[in-house]
Length: 93
Image (tube, rainbow, N blue to C red; front, side, top):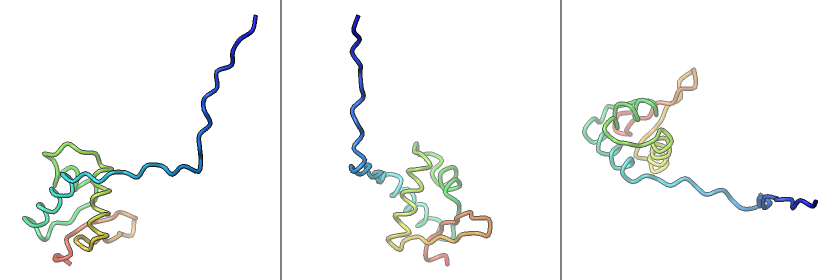
């Protein structure tokens, strides 16, 4: 009796992985929070749990939005001695 071998297609390693997509709702919520609380500063987990407590989103969505806003110059971040990153509005520095 012959059995057919089922093989998975080879993964093309030259194909780039899809880039994560920025969540515009998260981006807007962070901007609104910073406008209302210009001296606010927190970790990605704090932003997710406190600033955006009412919003359904992932920590990864928040991290992506924070990094994007840092890249635009709207936020800054400081790295503490233990490696923790704190994000804050530029006007608060």
